[in-house]
Length: 240
Ligand SMILES: C[S@@+](CC[C@H](N)C(=O)[O-])C[C@H]1O[C@@H](n2cnc3c(N)ncnc32)[C@H](O)[C@@H]1O
Image (cartoon, rainbow, N blue to C red):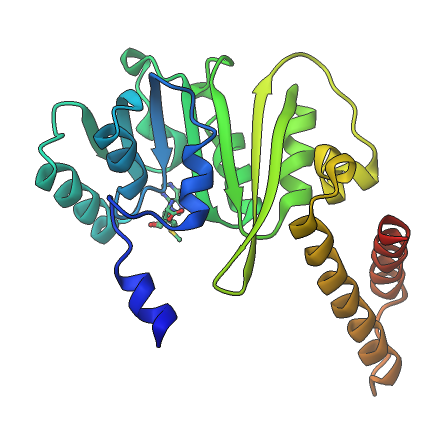
């Protein structure tokens, strides 16, 4: 009940801790494109604080698009924040001079697909501030394959969910190992308490999955079992 009440109070003035951590990675004075902006809280909060110079809020769905328009108008920011109904990076126009792109609150695969299908809209100088809900590995894989170096990573827990934030810039070729793509190259080194707790939880989950596989009436494909067993081994090694 308390959580629900607190959730409802979140708006462009009081962001969730998750979005506050995203805010911390947006460079001062940026021209931000927030893709999948929903209610538009992130760009509006940044502009209200004088932290960015301009923003585009992109939304593919009509209801959140209208919601973002309302938030922008209610804060008198319509000249400085442009709300566009568009799929992914198609919200960005050449004249916007975008220097940072945030894509938050979606699966890592969805964020990857948005980046991949919108490559033509990237100039290559934009800082990417990504907040995937799961699917971090395929997203990091895309970043590596497209010349993006991971500059900063963090894990945080809010409302019983683990969230990750990945900040990247295109900085020439970079090679990450399979384990680094899985855990995050910087997080593996920093080993923050939130990161370790997340992977302790994940290990329990993988072990439970392996137990279910072993007890399953119908044989689980060998490849699937091997994949989960490999993940459990990597996590055990990480936590050792
Ligand atoms: C869960 S909300 C996250 C909202 C906000 N970014 C946040 O982190 O709080 C995801 C939003 O992304 C939008 N979205 C999903 N795919 C999109 C795409 N390809 N292009 C633009 N918006 C998209 C959805 O319509 C939805 O409003």
